Length: 387
Image 1 (cartoon, rainbow, N blue to C red):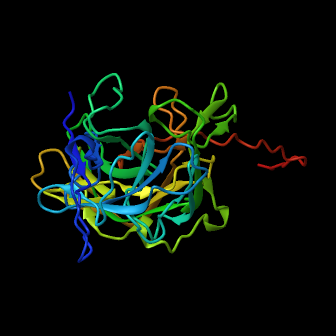
Image 2 (cartoon, rainbow, N blue to C red):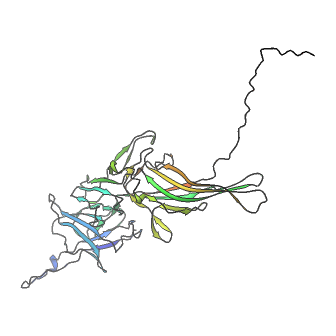
Image 3 (cartoon, rainbow, N blue to C red):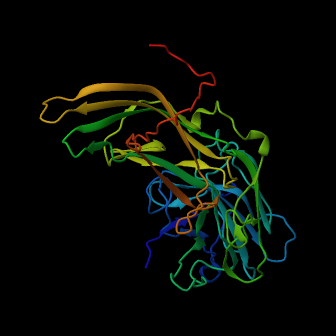
């Protein structure tokens, strides 16, 4: 069974100076608590961290849109998770809940209603955030009377977050960089990676999620769907979960988020992360990207390298430098058509890792000799010699 963190909204008694409040234990209301599932987040990779907060909405049954809880922040106070204002379970009414993360972050706050969530014009170049939304928890009446999801027993409002964006990481690996000939001559190549650029990337867009189910319990939101039907990419039409992209922001070559100009000396068979975010101890996470359909010839990775060639003759001790190519530019499409490992879209909630292998040892230079045919020429006039 997964671990859970319990989020509680603590009771606060607001008393007027001349008012006496008596509590009837038989009618005492319980404080609403939240419980997040063990779900990967950007901070710990396992549980929702107590240094983060999230926003919460709630509606009581029978209402047409007014909120029971309207965009309140839930935070850990050192002992428990709580809002600044207490909320209690209402009597004889069910309550529906929706939560999102991060709370009130600039450029990433959804527009929320009872049956839809909408992210408007989120720019992932400016908003490098793990934007998450929780499944809607529908028809709850008490912390201790929760719906089973078939796997876990919940003791509070179940809060199961899903990633609205996608995450992309690029590793560059130096492949075979040495050749030995039959006579013992060795040729090797050293490669310095000078820059990496992703181009043709959609960086801003909208995402609308809807609620179609009327059941109670943990109800996932319906993601937006786009159909990929290009037969040069897929054998049969495939539905993918992507955002509606703002196409005016394609090919922003000055976007430093997707450009890496750090020089790296590549080591054979050792990958180096070139598009990603350091998380310490030589570990790198991906960057958050707009979920999008990959278009043939559009989204590309371009590498600029310095390649130095050396040769060592048979029985020689040292290599001799024979060629320096300072700005070798190579590029590849980010759309992968391999039938066993195709990537035709960056979809919501996907963590995508590209491993780019550089092979500086090109084809061996060979020769194809031929001789031009003789052009026959006959002299028309005879040459007569007298002896």
